[in-house]
Length: 213
Image (cartoon, rainbow, N blue to C red; front, side):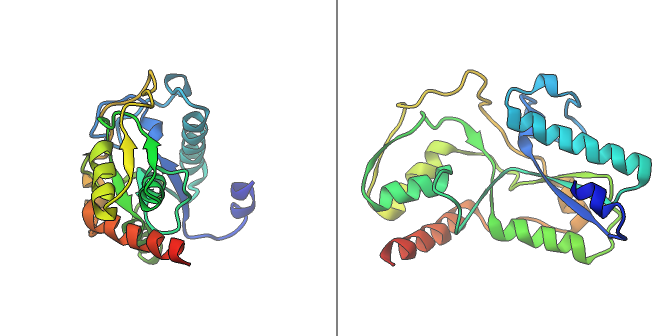
């Protein structure tokens, strides 16, 4: 529906926030040019829906030069995120000094702080980059184990009891999942500024203030 409306407007760029889950079980680091272009290889409905949106928009670009650029997002985090995500969930339980169930935490993921994310989105709108019809990975490019993230939060909060191993990993769980961001760095002269430790500290402080109020 959005596309049908915007096709009639003289827009400069349409940004699609896509998802890293479109890579399925492809070996990391994930590269934009290497992903299966059929949904049958994907397990979740969410992944299938995201990939169909990507393929639809890329086809529209090829046929009608619709000015779409696709950012394939990894795990964004930071202030104001809902508590059903791993980082705010962990922070909340630690600040309340609770026991909470976790997986074994041995899986590695790619986290990007919200300021780094928004910085590149605004940058892609403001300059006349030749990026229409292209996909760009948007992550930190550095894998970190979930267990390390949880323990870092616990140590900074100085309380909380994560119960590792109480939640089983999914059968299709990808052990190591992270981005190759070389293409994104090159096109936008961009790189993440906020390292995971600093980002987590900023995020913990935000939720501490929320709970105080």
